[in-house]
Amino acid sequence: MHYETFIPVFILFVVLGLIMPLVFAGVADKNRNAAAAEPVAPQAKSLFDQLGGDAAVNAAVDIFYRRVLADAYVVRFFEGVDMDKQAAKQKAFLTMAFGGPHNYTGKDMREGHRHLVKMGLNDSHFDHILMHLRATLAELGVANNLIQQVIATAETTRDDVLDR
Ligand code: HEM
Image 1 (tube, protein in one colour):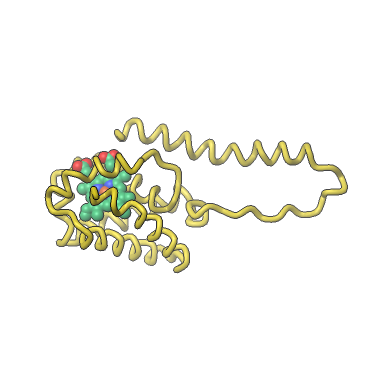
Image 2 (image 1 turned 120 degrees about the vertical axis):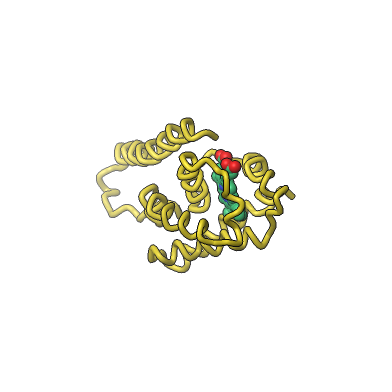
């Protein structure tokens, strides 16, 4: 997806994500009678929200990008990549890994990385990227159990990214 289309779609998801709970809360309020005024049980927050949502993604992009480009083992895959578009792609990457709203499918992941597989992209490079993801989150002070969940989400894309 292009940067120009990704941003509006991403903003739409975020806005819907903010508005829909309010709409549902309003409906629930109308249906509630006076006797049911006891406190409402806290709702389970998504991983994306627990990590701090969009703001957390933005904070993580810088650190993650710096780490990846400083890694001689994987940097060759990023050479020649359009730098203006790269920030949006890093953001898309992290939004996916955080389990947040995104528009990428397995097919997109295959197509987006196929040329890299032809360049030799394999499990060891994938492991390096996960290592940088883990280190980025640790640097931001994210709790270990959340880091585990992010890594598990990123793992689900392995076979698509490696085109097998
Ligand atoms: C956790 C697994 C991964 C996820 C979720 C992921 C996600 C993404 C996404 C969403 C894009 C943007 C695709 C587009 O719209 O064009 C992208 C592009 C890219 N990814 Fe990944 N990625 C992963 C692993 C890797 C690995 C292991 C490498 C290399 C070491 C890598 C290198 C790249 C590069 C270089 C691009 C830009 C390609 C180009 O524009 O030519 N990715 N990735």
